[in-house]
Structure formats: C-alpha cells, structure tokens
Length: 287
Image (cartoon, rainbow, N blue to C red; front, side):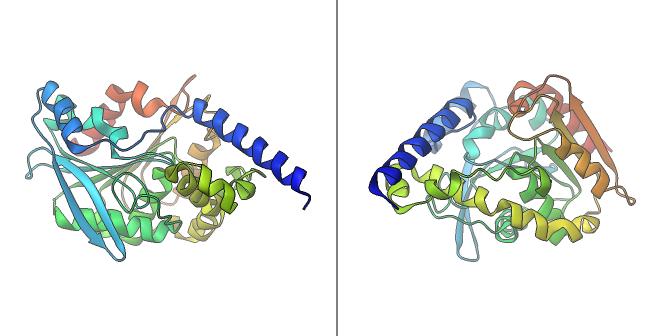
C-alpha cells in the first residue's frame, strides 16, 4: 500500500476515534481506590474494600461495599470503561439498604490486566463468576451496561444456578445490530496501537470480535433461567433500541423478561436514570 495512503488512513482513523471519544463520555480512566473511597465517604456510606480474585489467567480487581449478609448486586461495565463507571451506585445509600454492591474491572480494563485484551465472552463471564464465588449469597443480581450486557448474559447462560436476575442496560446483544465499522481494522495496526491509549486498543479489539461472540451465543439464550429486565433508551445512537426487542424474542420461551423502554433516552441512561435502575434492582430483590 502506498505510503501516502497509509498516512491518510491513519489520520482518518485517528480523527474518527477522537470524535468517538468526544461522544463516548462514559469513557473513563481507572481511578485509585483512595480517591473512590474519598468519594464514598463523602456520600456517607463508608469505605469500599478493593479486592482481587484469580480467574484462570486473569487477575480480576473489584470493589465491594455493603453488608455481606445482604443480596449481592454485581455491576459490569462497557467498553471502554472500568468499575469507576459505577461509583455512584457504590455510593447509593438507597441501594445499600437492600444489597451489597460489587463493581468489577473487566479483564483488560481498570486494574484487571490493564491493556491485555480478552475478547472471549466465555472468559469474561468466567471472571465475573470468580468474583461471585468469592462472595456467596442467597440472591445474586447482575447489572451490565453496553458491552457488559452480553457479558452478564453469558454468565447466566454458563452458570444459571448462580444468577437470580439480570438487568441489561443498553446492552449490545443482537449480532445483527452490531456495527461492522471499516476503520476498526486500520485502528488495530501496530502503529495505531502504539499511539492509542491501551484501554482504547482493548476496546477496539474486543468490539471487533463481538459479532462472532454474539453469534456463538445464539443457541444459548434458552439456558437463562432467571428474570431479565432490559432497560433501553429509544434514542440510543450507539446501541440501537432493537437490542431490547432481540432479548424479548430470545427469552420468549418461559423466561421472565421485562422491557423498560426509556422514551428519548440515550446510551447513558445507566447514569441519567440511576434512581429508576435502583428501583428495578429493589423490585428484583423483593420479588
């Protein structure tokens, strides 16, 4: 390929990525535990504990807060992201009245093997399972935002006995709705990987693999046995609303599935609709 063409494609990909970063205001860099605990103490909920568990080849980092005897809510972030994305939930006094809350750094992000891509949803799910196993609870509810949606769905498929409820928020779960952007392959060139933040390299690589991962999950949806709530904005430009209807179709055979369509909502409803999502969690816990 001519040098000028390579340079042109590189510059274009950089421009597209920068535009994407401006739009993806959920993009967050990892935050030190001390800073997170300072925030939590300011909310009046005390300190979280920051722990690690080994899941195969992955060292998984996570935060836990709340009384250990309460039901367990595990929150799984999107791509890119980190457990910092759920800081406000860790500090939500109303939620902590009824649950202990864990926020996970998925492999490749935060302080979980940062910069090392794990594109397998099976292994991402195994990392979440390792966290759950360390904190046995009579009731376990998983929350997944964006890319975290298919991760928690895979947990419920592979380990149905562990999961009592799923809350999928703006989840990328329908393979046919997964965009196949041409610029992702050039963004994975060695030169681009050297320029981009490690979290963005990981993000790009796992999203490139997501279509095939979701296709592999198609026969597995009937393995989910717990109630599922899908919270989806109708104006989400990153994850189309059709993903919610996909869940309804795939879970129609006996599973409980509830769609909460947020009129005019975008991809960031995990934060703008926190009170409503906390109420969804409380309803699942109570029922």
